[in-house]
Length: 316
Image 1 (spheres, rainbow, N blue to C red):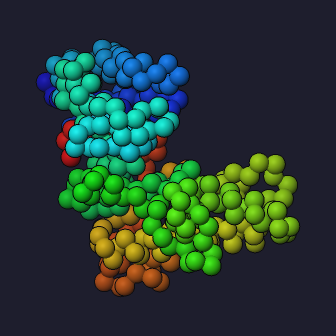
Image 2: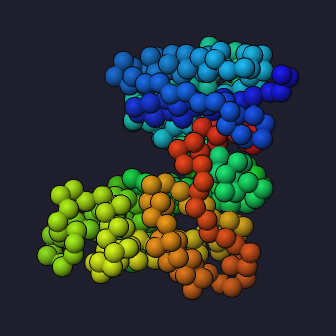
Image 3: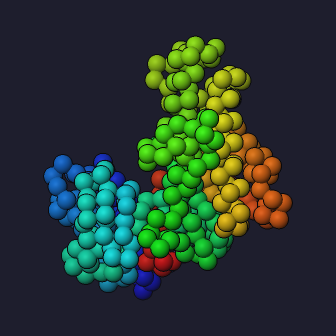
């Protein structure tokens, strides 16, 4: 075997996931080990090094075939300097991880935040395969985003581009404060957290809903109730989908992507979410900006971060 391979690292607070990809973005092998945040930054970095070496050693590929390592982390990153500015879930603050790992591994290393690498993964080898311009939304605890222009991640001047969850879409009279401190962010209504909050508010108001019987409401409970015809749950889902569709229409007016890819746990709701989002997008986006544009679910699931991190070596 003479082909080059690339290792992607998904650095999480509980586990570090690593994977080997080929030059086409095909995920060939994966491995997962504990992060061990409680043992400090050096232990976490040592674990990354250990898991990267382990996955190559147990693969049919040689260390010489490893062209480089890419890493994605949930937090603020200075991509140009290779520094994790702040990643509370792994206890990192101003950690020059790129230079540290390059010294330890003797390989080229690139980093980016988790939403960007997930977007790159989907664009490279997932739903967006073959699409040069797309925007990826990740609907989970929050709302993450990644922008792919000409096949590469668009960073913005300070690396903060793609913070779509913090676009202001909710009118003042309906707005609540987001975790970022501002009012009316998309994240407050279209994330799992926002959907759960709206459901709990409805229960506390005494609205007639089957969610009254759920001890700890999760976003899936809301979608399941909506699919069963629960009017309160349907109202919540429609609200989340409306503001998501509104956001897509605004982004289309600025970036004119060919495709919107929606991933994360909330996206698993299926047609009850996507049909409404597509309808809202069609009603709000000018017709020329809709032409040829598709809105699709992500396909790589939890592997998007690994694949996209590996892709940093080729497509960034």
